[in-house]
Amino acid sequence: MTLRAASEKENRQEGRALHPVDREIAVRFDSVSFSYGNVPVLEDTSFHIHQGEFVALVGPNGSGKTTILRLLLGLEQPASGSVELFGVRAASGKKSSGWQSRLGYVPQQPPSDQSFPITVRDVVKMGLLRRFGRYASRDISAVDAAMEQAGVGELSGRSYRALSGGQRRRVLVARALAACPEVFILDEPTANMDSESEHQLFETLGNLKGKTTILIVTHDTDFVSALTDRVLCLGMDGNKRRAIVQHRIAATEQSGRHGDIAISEARVLHGENFPADDCYE
Image 1: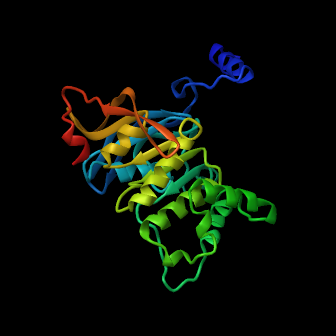
Image 2: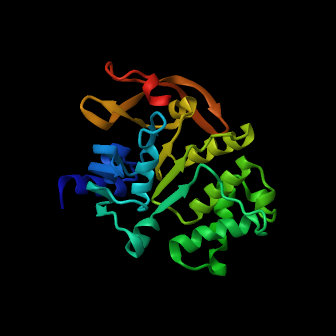
């Protein structure tokens, strides 16, 4: 047993929570390059995310944020380099099912087929099928817990297609949580979201922080500052077409509470050679 493994075991035995940076690496991009045709999108891009860490991925439109999500979800394969989830390299096709079952994903645009009648509970059940390939009556508690966690329990019997955009996104959060994902991925989670849904999402993610690895793609600077541990800013850097620049979060004294979640006044510290505006345009 390594010293680090021994230390982790000791912390678990004594009930001490590990800081995310002391935990194993959940997501690793190692010298990843990717192109659409002859257009390079990522070149020699590397970063990692620790288990239990809450990380925001920001950058201007066209910088490669969506490509990173597609690579992580196993929908694309890198031209060179590797993408790993808990030390296992990404696979494509049928081989990716085991990989994808460890991920929870909430898309930016909630799908809706107006001709297909389906309830909120039915949508959340789909998360169990993605992870376990089945749904049994004994799993009902997981569905109920996920809906309560996402704040959509009272919507259980309502038609999914009749919900607002913000409500649908919260239902998709519940669907992802029902499968108990090890890595939770959200694409622009607050875009076009009403204030009530944004408040509930903030509380849900705040309760998950430190327990589940979370990666969000966002332009919402307030959201970034209030919840995330680190910011990965994707953009131009020297001779590299696309590069990840890391920024830490600087927190001051606690300034308020959002629901039951204590938040601190925080700001993103940017490198001197990387203007802040480049991250969010």
